[in-house]
Image (cartoon, rainbow, N blue to C red):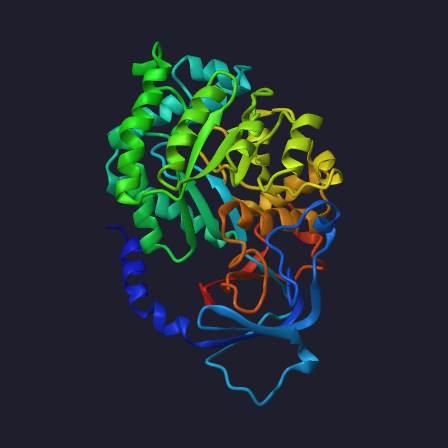
Amino acid sequence: MNFLLCFRTFAHKFYYKFRNMRTIIRNIKGLAGVETDKRAIAVCGKDMDNLNIINDAYLICNNGKFECFGRMTELDKEQNFDFDFDADNGYVLPSFCDSHTHLVYKGSREIEYIDKIKGLSYEEIAKRGGGILNSAERLRSASEQELFEDAYVRIEEIKCLGTGAVEIKSGYGLNTESELKMLRVIRRLKEECDIVIKANFLAAHAFPLEYKGNPNGYVDLIVNEMLPRVADEGLADYVDVFCDRGFFTTEQTERILLEALQYNLIPKIHANELDFSGGVETGVKYNALSVDHLEYIGERQIEVLKASQTMPTILPGAAFFLNMKLSPAREMINAGLPIAMASDFNPGSSPSGNMQLILSFACINYKLTPFEAINATTLNTAYAMGISNTHGTIAAGKVANFYITKKIPSIEYMPYYYGSNKIKEIFINGIKH
């Protein structure tokens, strides 16, 4: 076990002791994303451009939760605190929630990156045995310990960049034992990391080479063998399917979702990245928590989503890295929909988990306002993870995951000054890291 993991084991012995301490953050230039009496589980349409900010503020945490907040002039100076921090005129924002990642993997895929530069498409690389199949081959030969150590380092990296909750998908195993191996690694990460982690079973990510001529046979394997074992070990919170052109059809997707519902696994869908695939409609039909990617969205899909509780989730990093057409985020918001934006952190199409960069992409490429972008990467992504009742905003009783910025002139500076880490301090469960 490397030094980082040894240190983490040592630190966990003291974790709950410090979590129960009462902490104050003083001299906050602007406390953003606060909620008082009215609580929202998500924000939609024009409301996405509303972000409550308290200027010259303080914030108090207790027992790992937000206790209260207000203006410095209103602070009762007679109170006692176990820890007293000075924000030094920095801003405080709720931690990012990254609702779509594939960060358990073995090895990078920079050679395919060169192929992309030379003009090969995502589908052409996949047909040559690259893409997801390349990652599957490497993952099958890796041990659980190797996968855990690599993923742990990635989680520490994204945490330092402001992420306080993350969903991790399987999908690089593509056989029963390797998919279970990935999910067991995610379970261990849940146990040993201090941020919230959700596990998503995504065996329906691609068709393995051994089922190239028998795609329905692979669906049989998922339904008859993988799903019962995943459920028996309690390894997943969600089930996902890559429902798109060249991958899983709507009929195959429905079969997997119907079976997963027997095990109380909540659906999520990779949808409409490559074409008008029917993935959005299928996801809504089965009450998917989110449908993700959404490069191909028209009036029909917008109307279907408006009549649902499904969160449309855009993955700007993948569209940027693959030079794909952009999802019509502005049209979706103008139609009254909510929008979430996540990193899609993975080795092939989005090798970055930097949610500060996603915040910038949201504004630069998708024309969201800074306030819309913050809501899209905090509260709405928390909804897409099923945790917006506890994460995504700063409200009394919610989990105290937040960060303090360096000295910046305004909230709008966060997406504007792209490419650098603007965070000075991070707090997870009310504890400074």
